[in-house]
Length: 461
Image 1 (cartoon, rainbow, N blue to C red):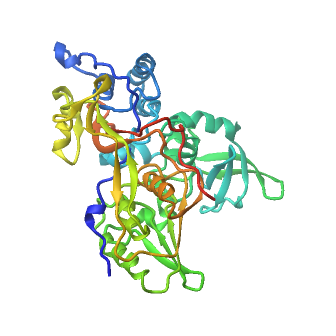
Image 2 (image 1 turned 45 degrees about the vertical axis):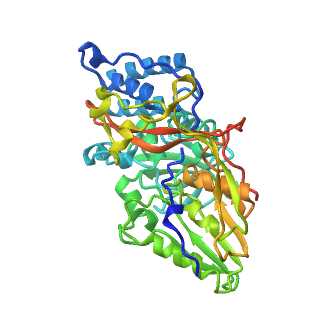
Image 3 (image 1 turned 120 degrees about the horizontal axis):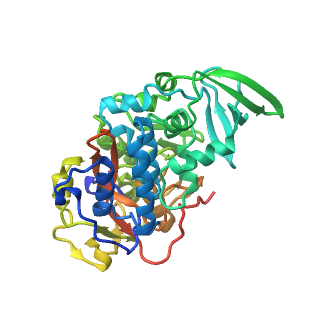
Protein backbone atom coordinates (compact mmCIF):
# COMPACT_ATOMS: atom_id res chain seq x y z
CA UNK A 1 0.00 0.00 0.00
CA UNK A 2 1.47 3.41 -0.89
CA UNK A 3 2.51 5.68 1.94
CA UNK A 4 2.01 9.39 2.25
CA UNK A 5 5.32 11.21 2.53
CA UNK A 6 5.68 13.99 5.08
CA UNK A 7 7.90 15.89 2.66
CA UNK A 8 4.79 16.60 0.56
CA UNK A 9 3.40 18.68 3.41
CA UNK A 10 5.69 21.71 3.19
CA UNK A 11 4.72 24.69 5.31
CA UNK A 12 2.05 26.52 3.41
CA UNK A 13 1.66 29.97 4.37
CA UNK A 14 0.98 30.75 0.74
CA UNK A 15 0.24 34.27 0.86
CA UNK A 16 0.04 38.33 -1.58
CA UNK A 17 1.41 39.76 -4.66
CA UNK A 18 3.31 42.95 -4.07
CA UNK A 19 4.07 45.40 -6.81
CA UNK A 20 7.52 46.15 -8.04
CA UNK A 21 7.37 49.52 -6.31
CA UNK A 22 9.35 49.73 -3.09
CA UNK A 23 10.54 52.78 -1.24
CA UNK A 24 13.28 52.99 1.35
CA UNK A 25 11.72 53.18 4.83
CA UNK A 26 12.06 56.52 6.54
CA UNK A 27 14.30 56.91 9.56
CA UNK A 28 12.93 55.33 12.68
CA UNK A 29 12.35 57.63 15.61
CA UNK A 30 14.86 55.52 17.52
CA UNK A 31 17.55 56.62 15.04
CA UNK A 32 17.13 60.21 16.18
CA UNK A 33 16.92 59.43 19.86
CA UNK A 34 13.19 60.12 20.09
CA UNK A 35 10.76 57.60 21.51
CA UNK A 36 8.42 55.87 19.06
CA UNK A 37 4.66 55.91 19.41
CA UNK A 38 2.43 53.00 18.40
CA UNK A 39 1.58 54.87 15.20
CA UNK A 40 5.31 55.29 14.43
CA UNK A 41 5.86 51.57 14.94
CA UNK A 42 2.98 50.69 12.62
CA UNK A 43 4.42 52.81 9.82
CA UNK A 44 7.99 51.64 10.32
CA UNK A 45 7.07 47.95 10.51
CA UNK A 46 4.88 47.97 7.41
CA UNK A 47 7.35 49.99 5.34
CA UNK A 48 10.31 47.84 6.32
CA UNK A 49 8.74 44.38 6.18
CA UNK A 50 5.47 44.02 4.30
CA UNK A 51 6.01 42.63 0.75
CA UNK A 52 2.60 43.76 -0.49
CA UNK A 53 2.34 47.20 1.05
CA UNK A 54 2.34 48.98 -2.32
CA UNK A 55 0.65 46.40 -4.47
CA UNK A 56 -2.76 48.06 -4.27
CA UNK A 57 -1.80 51.54 -3.08
CA UNK A 58 0.94 54.04 -3.86
CA UNK A 59 3.43 55.28 -1.26
CA UNK A 60 1.64 58.63 -1.20
CA UNK A 61 -1.73 56.94 -0.64
CA UNK A 62 -0.29 54.92 2.23
CA UNK A 63 1.26 58.07 3.72
CA UNK A 64 -2.10 59.84 3.63
CA UNK A 65 -3.90 56.85 5.12
CA UNK A 66 -1.30 56.53 7.84
CA UNK A 67 -1.60 60.22 8.75
CA UNK A 68 -5.39 59.85 9.13
CA UNK A 69 -4.88 56.65 11.10
CA UNK A 70 -2.35 58.23 13.45
CA UNK A 71 -4.67 61.14 14.20
CA UNK A 72 -7.61 58.85 15.03
CA UNK A 73 -5.45 56.32 16.89
CA UNK A 74 -3.65 58.83 19.08
CA UNK A 75 -6.85 60.67 20.02
CA UNK A 76 -9.03 57.60 20.60
CA UNK A 77 -9.78 55.15 23.39
CA UNK A 78 -9.03 51.43 23.02
CA UNK A 79 -12.05 50.76 20.79
CA UNK A 80 -11.21 53.70 18.52
CA UNK A 81 -7.62 52.47 18.24
CA UNK A 82 -8.86 49.04 17.14
CA UNK A 83 -11.05 50.55 14.41
CA UNK A 84 -8.33 52.91 13.16
CA UNK A 85 -5.65 50.22 13.04
CA UNK A 86 -7.84 47.58 11.37
CA UNK A 87 -8.97 50.00 8.66
CA UNK A 88 -5.38 50.98 7.88
CA UNK A 89 -4.28 47.34 7.70
CA UNK A 90 -7.21 46.28 5.53
CA UNK A 91 -6.37 49.03 3.03
CA UNK A 92 -3.22 47.02 2.24
CA UNK A 93 -5.62 44.47 0.71
CA UNK A 94 -3.76 41.47 2.09
CA UNK A 95 -5.74 38.63 3.61
CA UNK A 96 -3.00 37.94 6.16
CA UNK A 97 -2.58 41.50 7.47
CA UNK A 98 -4.99 42.28 10.30
CA UNK A 99 -5.55 42.52 14.04
CA UNK A 100 -5.50 38.81 14.79
CA UNK A 101 -7.69 37.86 17.79
CA UNK A 102 -6.01 34.46 18.05
CA UNK A 103 -2.60 36.08 18.67
CA UNK A 104 -3.62 38.60 21.35
CA UNK A 105 -2.75 38.33 25.00
CA UNK A 106 -5.53 36.98 27.19
CA UNK A 107 -6.15 40.47 28.55
CA UNK A 108 -6.39 42.14 25.14
CA UNK A 109 -8.60 39.38 23.76
CA UNK A 110 -10.97 39.92 26.65
CA UNK A 111 -11.07 43.66 25.87
CA UNK A 112 -11.81 42.85 22.23
CA UNK A 113 -14.66 40.40 22.76
CA UNK A 114 -15.92 39.96 26.32
CA UNK A 115 -18.09 43.09 26.48
CA UNK A 116 -19.45 42.97 22.94
CA UNK A 117 -23.17 42.67 22.22
CA UNK A 118 -23.82 40.35 19.29
CA UNK A 119 -26.76 39.70 16.99
CA UNK A 120 -28.81 36.66 18.12
CA UNK A 121 -29.17 35.01 14.69
CA UNK A 122 -26.79 33.57 12.11
CA UNK A 123 -26.74 35.01 8.59
CA UNK A 124 -24.91 35.29 5.29
CA UNK A 125 -24.68 38.10 2.75
CA UNK A 126 -26.36 36.94 -0.46
CA UNK A 127 -26.57 39.35 -3.40
CA UNK A 128 -26.00 42.22 -0.99
CA UNK A 129 -28.77 41.15 1.39
CA UNK A 130 -28.46 39.91 4.98
CA UNK A 131 -30.13 36.47 4.93
CA UNK A 132 -30.80 34.46 8.10
CA UNK A 133 -29.36 30.93 7.87
CA UNK A 134 -30.14 29.66 11.37
CA UNK A 135 -31.73 30.76 14.66
CA UNK A 136 -29.73 29.22 17.53
CA UNK A 137 -30.98 31.75 20.12
CA UNK A 138 -34.71 31.52 19.52
CA UNK A 139 -35.63 34.77 17.82
CA UNK A 140 -38.27 33.02 15.72
CA UNK A 141 -36.73 34.30 12.47
CA UNK A 142 -36.75 31.35 10.04
CA UNK A 143 -33.93 30.55 7.64
CA UNK A 144 -34.33 32.61 4.49
CA UNK A 145 -35.53 35.71 6.31
CA UNK A 146 -34.19 38.95 4.81
CA UNK A 147 -33.02 41.43 7.45
CA UNK A 148 -33.97 44.88 6.14
CA UNK A 149 -33.04 47.16 9.07
CA UNK A 150 -31.41 46.88 12.49
CA UNK A 151 -32.06 49.76 14.88
CA UNK A 152 -33.29 51.78 11.93
CA UNK A 153 -30.14 51.29 9.83
CA UNK A 154 -30.51 49.49 6.51
CA UNK A 155 -28.56 46.26 6.10
CA UNK A 156 -26.89 47.64 2.95
CA UNK A 157 -25.60 50.61 4.97
CA UNK A 158 -24.32 48.27 7.69
CA UNK A 159 -22.40 46.26 5.11
CA UNK A 160 -20.99 49.36 3.41
CA UNK A 161 -19.53 50.62 6.70
CA UNK A 162 -18.08 47.25 7.72
CA UNK A 163 -16.46 46.12 4.46
CA UNK A 164 -13.37 48.36 4.91
CA UNK A 165 -12.71 46.40 8.13
CA UNK A 166 -12.65 42.99 6.39
CA UNK A 167 -9.29 41.58 5.33
CA UNK A 168 -8.96 40.09 1.84
CA UNK A 169 -6.46 39.83 -1.00
CA UNK A 170 -6.91 42.51 -3.62
CA UNK A 171 -10.47 43.14 -4.75
CA UNK A 172 -11.82 39.79 -3.54
CA UNK A 173 -15.35 40.75 -2.44
CA UNK A 174 -16.59 37.19 -1.69
CA UNK A 175 -13.90 36.85 0.98
CA UNK A 176 -14.93 40.10 2.63
CA UNK A 177 -18.60 39.09 2.58
CA UNK A 178 -17.75 35.73 4.13
CA UNK A 179 -15.86 37.40 6.98
CA UNK A 180 -18.77 39.76 7.61
CA UNK A 181 -21.22 36.86 7.86
CA UNK A 182 -22.10 34.94 11.03
CA UNK A 183 -22.53 31.22 10.36
CA UNK A 184 -21.98 29.74 13.81
CA UNK A 185 -18.52 28.27 13.31
CA UNK A 186 -16.33 31.33 13.90
CA UNK A 187 -14.27 31.35 17.09
CA UNK A 188 -13.49 35.07 16.77
CA UNK A 189 -16.06 36.47 14.38
CA UNK A 190 -15.03 39.52 12.36
CA UNK A 191 -18.60 40.80 12.13
CA UNK A 192 -19.19 40.25 15.84
CA UNK A 193 -16.30 42.49 16.82
CA UNK A 194 -16.68 45.30 14.33
CA UNK A 195 -20.47 45.52 14.30
CA UNK A 196 -20.40 46.26 18.03
CA UNK A 197 -17.50 48.71 17.69
CA UNK A 198 -19.14 50.67 14.87
CA UNK A 199 -22.86 50.50 15.73
CA UNK A 200 -22.94 49.86 19.51
CA UNK A 201 -26.20 47.86 19.43
CA UNK A 202 -26.68 47.66 23.21
CA UNK A 203 -28.78 45.06 25.09
CA UNK A 204 -31.57 44.92 22.48
CA UNK A 205 -31.95 45.45 18.74
CA UNK A 206 -35.04 46.43 16.79
CA UNK A 207 -35.21 44.31 13.64
CA UNK A 208 -37.30 44.82 10.52
CA UNK A 209 -37.32 41.76 8.29
CA UNK A 210 -39.16 39.92 5.57
CA UNK A 211 -39.68 36.22 6.24
CA UNK A 212 -40.13 33.63 3.47
CA UNK A 213 -43.50 34.18 1.81
CA UNK A 214 -43.02 37.99 2.00
CA UNK A 215 -44.29 38.12 5.57
CA UNK A 216 -43.17 41.33 7.27
CA UNK A 217 -41.60 40.78 10.70
CA UNK A 218 -40.81 43.49 13.24
CA UNK A 219 -39.27 42.49 16.55
CA UNK A 220 -37.19 43.61 19.50
CA UNK A 221 -34.55 40.99 20.32
CA UNK A 222 -32.03 40.67 23.12
CA UNK A 223 -28.43 40.75 21.91
CA UNK A 224 -26.13 37.98 23.11
CA UNK A 225 -22.66 37.81 24.64
CA UNK A 226 -19.53 36.33 23.10
CA UNK A 227 -19.81 33.51 25.65
CA UNK A 228 -23.31 32.70 24.39
CA UNK A 229 -22.06 32.72 20.79
CA UNK A 230 -19.35 30.18 21.54
CA UNK A 231 -21.71 28.01 23.62
CA UNK A 232 -23.98 27.66 20.58
CA UNK A 233 -21.15 27.24 18.07
CA UNK A 234 -20.27 24.13 16.11
CA UNK A 235 -18.12 21.54 17.87
CA UNK A 236 -15.17 22.35 15.58
CA UNK A 237 -14.88 25.73 17.30
CA UNK A 238 -14.84 24.21 20.77
CA UNK A 239 -12.76 21.08 20.05
CA UNK A 240 -10.01 20.15 22.52
CA UNK A 241 -6.41 19.68 21.26
CA UNK A 242 -6.66 15.88 21.22
CA UNK A 243 -9.98 15.66 19.36
CA UNK A 244 -10.11 14.87 15.62
CA UNK A 245 -10.13 17.94 13.41
CA UNK A 246 -11.18 16.11 10.23
CA UNK A 247 -14.01 13.68 9.62
CA UNK A 248 -14.90 10.94 7.14
CA UNK A 249 -18.33 9.71 6.08
CA UNK A 250 -19.92 7.69 3.30
CA UNK A 251 -22.59 8.35 0.67
CA UNK A 252 -23.95 6.93 -2.58
CA UNK A 253 -24.48 3.42 -1.16
CA UNK A 254 -21.04 3.61 0.47
CA UNK A 255 -19.32 4.08 -2.89
CA UNK A 256 -18.41 7.72 -2.16
CA UNK A 257 -16.03 8.77 0.60
CA UNK A 258 -16.54 12.30 2.00
CA UNK A 259 -13.62 13.86 3.87
CA UNK A 260 -14.51 17.05 5.74
CA UNK A 261 -11.56 19.33 6.57
CA UNK A 262 -12.63 22.55 8.35
CA UNK A 263 -9.01 23.69 8.77
CA UNK A 264 -5.44 22.90 7.74
CA UNK A 265 -4.04 24.86 10.69
CA UNK A 266 -2.58 21.82 12.40
CA UNK A 267 0.26 23.32 14.43
CA UNK A 268 -1.68 23.29 17.72
CA UNK A 269 -3.46 19.95 17.43
CA UNK A 270 -2.24 16.89 19.32
CA UNK A 271 -4.37 14.60 17.16
CA UNK A 272 -2.52 12.29 14.74
CA UNK A 273 -3.73 14.00 11.58
CA UNK A 274 -0.96 12.50 9.46
CA UNK A 275 -1.76 8.91 10.35
CA UNK A 276 -5.49 9.47 9.95
CA UNK A 277 -5.14 11.02 6.49
CA UNK A 278 -2.67 8.41 5.33
CA UNK A 279 -5.10 5.71 6.40
CA UNK A 280 -8.07 7.34 4.67
CA UNK A 281 -6.26 7.80 1.35
CA UNK A 282 -4.68 4.35 1.37
CA UNK A 283 -7.98 2.67 2.29
CA UNK A 284 -9.91 4.15 -0.64
CA UNK A 285 -7.58 2.45 -3.12
CA UNK A 286 -8.83 -1.00 -2.20
CA UNK A 287 -12.25 -0.69 -0.56
CA UNK A 288 -14.42 -0.18 -3.64
CA UNK A 289 -14.61 3.62 -3.39
CA UNK A 290 -15.56 5.14 -6.76
CA UNK A 291 -16.06 8.76 -5.72
CA UNK A 292 -14.17 11.04 -3.36
CA UNK A 293 -15.38 14.40 -2.00
CA UNK A 294 -13.24 16.84 -0.03
CA UNK A 295 -15.31 19.42 1.82
CA UNK A 296 -13.02 22.44 2.29
CA UNK A 297 -15.73 25.01 2.93
CA UNK A 298 -14.76 27.32 5.78
CA UNK A 299 -11.10 26.24 5.54
CA UNK A 300 -8.80 29.28 5.24
CA UNK A 301 -5.68 27.12 5.00
CA UNK A 302 -2.62 26.52 7.15
CA UNK A 303 -0.26 23.69 6.22
CA UNK A 304 -0.09 22.76 2.51
CA UNK A 305 -1.93 19.47 2.96
CA UNK A 306 -3.12 19.48 -0.65
CA UNK A 307 0.33 18.92 -2.13
CA UNK A 308 0.61 15.70 -0.15
CA UNK A 309 -2.74 14.44 -1.42
CA UNK A 310 -2.33 15.21 -5.11
CA UNK A 311 0.03 12.26 -5.87
CA UNK A 312 -2.89 9.94 -5.02
CA UNK A 313 -5.01 11.34 -7.87
CA UNK A 314 -2.65 11.98 -10.78
CA UNK A 315 -1.69 9.26 -13.26
CA UNK A 316 1.38 10.91 -14.70
CA UNK A 317 3.99 13.41 -13.69
CA UNK A 318 2.62 16.95 -13.69
CA UNK A 319 4.15 20.37 -13.20
CA UNK A 320 2.71 23.49 -11.61
CA UNK A 321 4.01 27.02 -12.02
CA UNK A 322 5.36 28.23 -8.70
CA UNK A 323 5.48 32.00 -8.12
CA UNK A 324 8.55 34.05 -7.40
CA UNK A 325 9.12 34.47 -3.65
CA UNK A 326 10.32 37.89 -2.52
CA UNK A 327 10.94 39.67 0.77
CA UNK A 328 11.51 43.35 1.59
CA UNK A 329 14.42 43.00 4.01
CA UNK A 330 17.73 41.27 4.51
CA UNK A 331 17.48 41.53 8.29
CA UNK A 332 14.65 42.87 10.40
CA UNK A 333 15.64 46.33 11.67
CA UNK A 334 17.00 46.20 15.21
CA UNK A 335 14.71 49.10 16.16
CA UNK A 336 11.70 46.86 15.53
CA UNK A 337 12.85 43.59 17.06
CA UNK A 338 11.22 44.41 20.40
CA UNK A 339 7.73 44.49 18.85
CA UNK A 340 8.15 41.36 16.70
CA UNK A 341 7.59 37.77 17.71
CA UNK A 342 7.61 34.62 15.58
CA UNK A 343 8.11 30.88 15.85
CA UNK A 344 11.45 30.67 14.00
CA UNK A 345 14.30 33.07 14.78
CA UNK A 346 15.76 32.55 11.30
CA UNK A 347 12.92 34.70 9.97
CA UNK A 348 14.63 37.80 11.38
CA UNK A 349 17.41 37.42 8.80
CA UNK A 350 15.30 35.75 6.10
CA UNK A 351 16.70 37.85 3.25
CA UNK A 352 20.33 37.83 4.36
CA UNK A 353 21.54 35.48 1.61
CA UNK A 354 18.82 36.37 -0.90
CA UNK A 355 19.51 37.87 -4.31
CA UNK A 356 18.59 41.53 -4.69
CA UNK A 357 16.20 42.02 -7.59
CA UNK A 358 14.17 44.84 -9.09
CA UNK A 359 12.91 47.72 -6.97
CA UNK A 360 14.71 46.70 -3.82
CA UNK A 361 13.15 43.30 -3.24
CA UNK A 362 15.21 40.27 -2.25
CA UNK A 363 14.48 37.01 -4.03
CA UNK A 364 14.23 33.87 -1.91
CA UNK A 365 13.19 31.68 -4.83
CA UNK A 366 12.73 32.46 -8.52
CA UNK A 367 9.55 31.57 -10.40
CA UNK A 368 9.78 27.91 -11.39
CA UNK A 369 7.81 24.79 -12.15
CA UNK A 370 7.11 22.32 -9.37
CA UNK A 371 7.05 18.66 -10.38
CA UNK A 372 4.74 16.14 -8.70
CA UNK A 373 4.93 12.43 -9.40
CA UNK A 374 2.04 9.97 -8.90
CA UNK A 375 2.03 7.28 -6.26
CA UNK A 376 2.64 3.71 -7.41
CA UNK A 377 -1.10 3.08 -7.04
CA UNK A 378 -3.51 5.95 -7.61
CA UNK A 379 -7.24 6.54 -7.23
CA UNK A 380 -9.13 6.08 -10.49
CA UNK A 381 -12.56 7.32 -9.39
CA UNK A 382 -14.07 10.79 -9.58
CA UNK A 383 -12.88 13.54 -7.25
CA UNK A 384 -14.86 16.64 -6.26
CA UNK A 385 -13.81 19.46 -3.93
CA UNK A 386 -16.30 21.77 -2.23
CA UNK A 387 -14.94 25.32 -2.04
CA UNK A 388 -16.02 28.78 -0.91
CA UNK A 389 -14.66 32.24 -0.17
CA UNK A 390 -12.90 31.11 3.01
CA UNK A 391 -10.33 29.24 0.88
CA UNK A 392 -7.70 31.97 0.79
CA UNK A 393 -4.27 30.57 1.62
CA UNK A 394 -3.12 26.95 1.31
CA UNK A 395 -6.63 25.86 0.30
CA UNK A 396 -6.69 28.55 -2.40
CA UNK A 397 -3.37 27.24 -3.73
CA UNK A 398 -4.75 23.69 -3.68
CA UNK A 399 -7.77 24.81 -5.71
CA UNK A 400 -5.39 26.36 -8.26
CA UNK A 401 -3.42 23.11 -8.48
CA UNK A 402 -6.59 21.08 -8.96
CA UNK A 403 -7.73 23.43 -11.72
CA UNK A 404 -4.35 23.20 -13.46
CA UNK A 405 -4.16 19.40 -13.21
CA UNK A 406 -7.79 18.74 -14.10
CA UNK A 407 -8.04 15.85 -11.63
CA UNK A 408 -11.03 17.19 -9.69
CA UNK A 409 -14.22 19.19 -10.11
CA UNK A 410 -14.43 22.37 -8.02
CA UNK A 411 -17.95 22.86 -6.70
CA UNK A 412 -19.37 25.75 -4.69
CA UNK A 413 -18.53 29.44 -4.63
CA UNK A 414 -15.58 31.63 -5.71
CA UNK A 415 -12.55 31.25 -3.46
CA UNK A 416 -10.75 33.81 -1.39
CA UNK A 417 -7.12 34.57 -2.16
CA UNK A 418 -6.12 36.23 -5.39
CA UNK A 419 -4.79 34.96 -8.70
CA UNK A 420 -2.33 37.86 -8.74
CA UNK A 421 -0.60 36.31 -5.75
CA UNK A 422 -0.80 36.42 -1.99
CA UNK A 423 1.53 37.12 0.97
CA UNK A 424 2.42 34.75 3.79
CA UNK A 425 4.78 31.83 4.35
CA UNK A 426 6.19 33.32 7.55
CA UNK A 427 4.95 36.06 9.88
CA UNK A 428 5.97 38.63 12.42
CA UNK A 429 3.39 38.91 15.19
CA UNK A 430 3.65 42.62 15.87
CA UNK A 431 2.67 43.87 19.34
CA UNK A 432 2.33 47.61 19.88
CA UNK A 433 3.87 48.80 23.17
CA UNK A 434 1.19 51.28 24.25
CA UNK A 435 -2.08 49.50 23.42
CA UNK A 436 -0.65 45.95 23.44
CA UNK A 437 -2.67 45.26 20.28
CA UNK A 438 -1.12 42.64 18.01
CA UNK A 439 -1.34 42.52 14.22
CA UNK A 440 0.13 40.02 11.76
CA UNK A 441 2.64 40.98 9.08
CA UNK A 442 3.36 38.33 6.40
CA UNK A 443 6.99 38.24 5.31
CA UNK A 444 7.00 36.61 1.86
CA UNK A 445 5.34 37.94 -1.28
CA UNK A 446 4.35 35.35 -3.90
CA UNK A 447 4.54 36.74 -7.44
CA UNK A 448 3.09 34.66 -10.29
CA UNK A 449 4.34 35.33 -13.81
CA UNK A 450 2.16 37.16 -16.30
CA UNK A 451 -1.03 39.19 -15.98
CA UNK A 452 -3.61 37.62 -13.68
CA UNK A 453 -7.17 38.57 -12.70
CA UNK A 454 -7.62 40.54 -9.51
CA UNK A 455 -9.92 37.83 -8.10
CA UNK A 456 -10.14 34.45 -6.50
CA UNK A 457 -10.85 31.26 -8.41
CA UNK A 458 -14.27 30.51 -9.88
CA UNK A 459 -15.72 27.02 -9.27
CA UNK A 460 -16.45 24.59 -12.14
CA UNK A 461 -19.97 24.12 -10.79
